[in-house]
Image 1 (cartoon, rainbow, N blue to C red):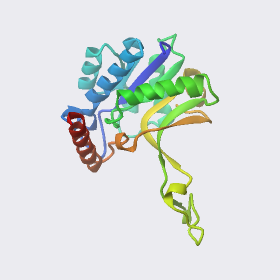
Image 2 (cartoon, one colour):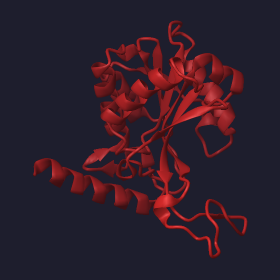
Image 3 (cartoon, helix red, strand yellow):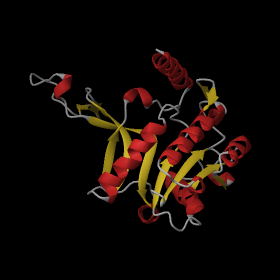
Image 4 (cartoon, rainbow, N blue to C red):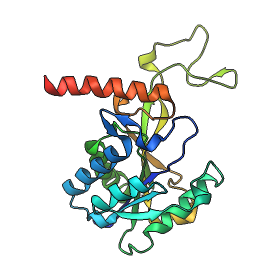
Length: 236
């Protein structure tokens, strides 16, 4: 997909994990890890490296992006400090970074906060996007975990009957949890909706073990523990 732009957003500030974009998993900063994963994915699919844009206000991340031959979008302060800008405003602001890529008809949006979502997962998402969105009936794609668990919402069971009709978890209707690892949509749709998903996204089911989202210090510890175990399996 040479008409695909890949946007990596990496904000310097974080309210819960100090210097989160430089937090380390498996001995590497999550920002560097994400750049490496994207680099391997685009190489595998023959996507030009200049189609990759890193939107950040962090100087170290900018330097790493340039070393990877990626483009850099300097995130303005209003879109980088705290949560001053709405999420929609941020999406529009960052999407303008690909305006110069006139041949890019599609956008993939990702972030370093899911460091275990690796290059193979990106490749899988892009291939599913071609099949389910470009050739299929869906208008966008989002990475999720399809969970067969017992959920309640607003004091009521969400996906099962909490009475004598209670069923085993294997028979539950799955509930999709967004992983924040990958969003894909046509560029025109992103501008129209001021969001990176349409009304009928394809839900790409991600292996749960690769879906940890670094939002707290505990998440970081879990990610490191998983990475360590994955390394042991690879070595064996």
